[in-house]
Image 1: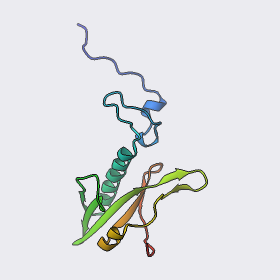
Image 2 (image 1 turned 180 degrees about the vertical axis):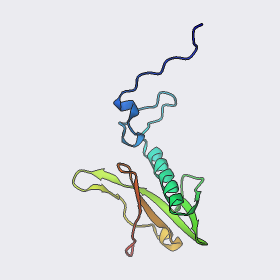
Image 3 (image 1 turned 135 degrees about the vertical axis):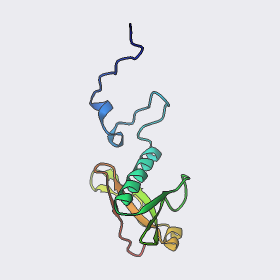
Image 4 (image 1 turned 45 degrees about the vertical axis):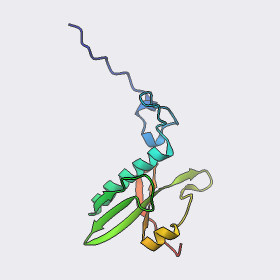
Length: 131
């Protein structure tokens, strides 16, 4: 009896590499660019959520795609507001933030910035110096 399942295609280096480091390719299924900046931003936010869980926070993700806050987190009965910023790469500077500082609204709200390095998947809180 013949199986209805097709054998898996042999994967090459390009298909097995991490989505954060792939070339700008189109998904055959939905036609979306895998490295679209919004998609990578979503991935950065999910890494931030798991990182905050590991740090002992209860985490609530913003349901919308806009706003001053990406994540609301609670730890030791304190509420924290976070905005996740992805570092970008340029040859002379390496990985860095394009836009430094918080918006006036974020400063007023007490939002803390988290930086995400897509190469190392490292997150860290950004120290604010007078925005």
